[in-house]
Picture 1 (cartoon, rainbow, N blue to C red):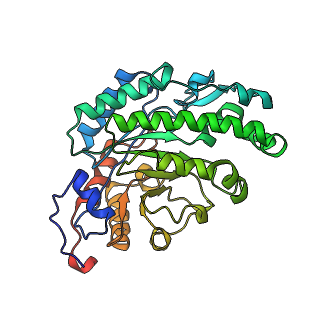
Picture 2: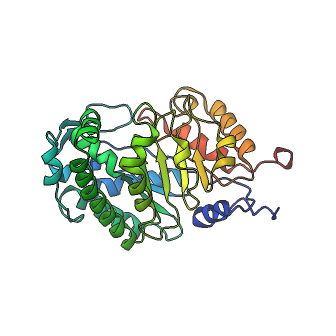
Length: 339
């Protein structure tokens, strides 16, 4: 085993060291939350992203656009109705009939609402020091299709009108790849690719393979970015579809029905990112309880390519002192007896 590096190793150097399997004294850590309303404009999204990093000094920064940022320019309507983690809900879908999939158009990612997100990404990257990696959330084409049509209609069209749905998904993939290309040109360090439908409660493995797996892989390999994360949302996930992704960090929620991180990390070809359940000690425990949970997880994951990142997004009610406790526990060197 290689010699442990000094505890002050940070940012890009720390992520790179962990992901190639070096022994390090601390674990890369980041935590993020939505900023509803403020995520509707490039300037305000930039401002809150930079303020969040200035406050918490995470090892990497994740830009948090609204979940509809890739669908809004197709005519979808949405709102924030007080969701606990700041997500938006769709109020008017776009796809009603199979023919509507063929009417989806190729988009210029710099125009319309998506242009706000690219401009925010550009300004965040220009403002932060080069050694701080910057990622942004990208939603996979199937996620966008479900926003535009609803899951029930996607399922119906997959069964009865597969050609029309495939054409729509191809358009959404082309638009997603165009956006990723622009993010790479802006010198971002990775994407946080969200798939919300790889759980058996949403889609069984065979439909997911047919509708999404190839496009997920295309998004993750669209640009030579060093720190791509794939977020698998929910529980009872189709893990077998993603175990061979050797250049990707799998991020998942520590919820009931998901595997133990140590056991999962032994099966993955790449790295792993997870952390305390956002609805557990993060929200309802004391700082000491949260730090003990993080320290226990770090002990168990020591020596593995692991990044600490709790949940898809922190609940808005999580207080700053709990985020401080999470980061403090990530950076406290473990003793030799913890190896």
